[in-house]
Image (tube, rainbow, N blue to C red; front, side, top):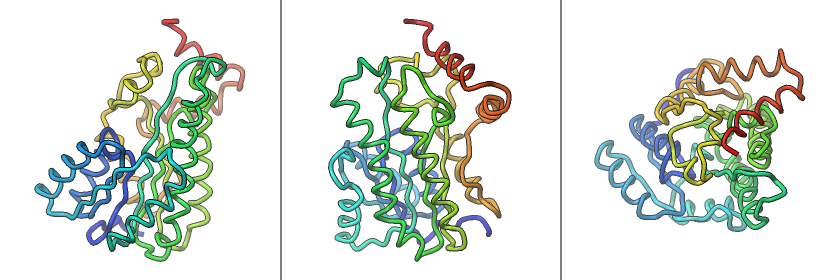
Length: 267
């Protein structure tokens, strides 16, 4: 395989109104891809779409959608068909976290977190993967997290959802071998986005230095451009080292307690 040619492609990106989603949109537009931007905040999507059309002369469509609603994959597939678009690549980026002991979590918010972080990723992947495989020239990127690699006290649900995303995506990588579709789970660490504003505390970063969205997206696109792309990639050298050390040198008990200490300082 050679580097992905995004010219003539149409890439659907969820969570595109800010953070990694907006950065994926900018970098893919710079490489020639037309875009379908999906998020709840229509004004932000419209502003980003206008910027990318002017800067890169690509087609950009905006779809305002709450992915916590029922059947997001079916809804997006129907909307892109209505627009006369053939989606060739998908970036499942939308997601959010909550912080605090699981027994104190608001049940409605927990259901919404599962709906966006798990159900929507699976549903959208299923809705589009058939045509992505048929096209055989694009990518399916599901954004997981460093939280996928170990349990996360005080972010127990978020870590579990991202472990699901990692496992699902790596399985789809194997199932899609030989089709031309490149499948990748991207696992960022703490990144300079609105994530922590939504969470409501910087404790969730565990004291980590925040990466730039541009660097995280470049890591993903570089992995996809490899001759033999991997099933998953961790953004950031220190994050990769931490994940490897955690698997090889520490017991599960030690890992869980270490992660717990990182987010417990200000309690």
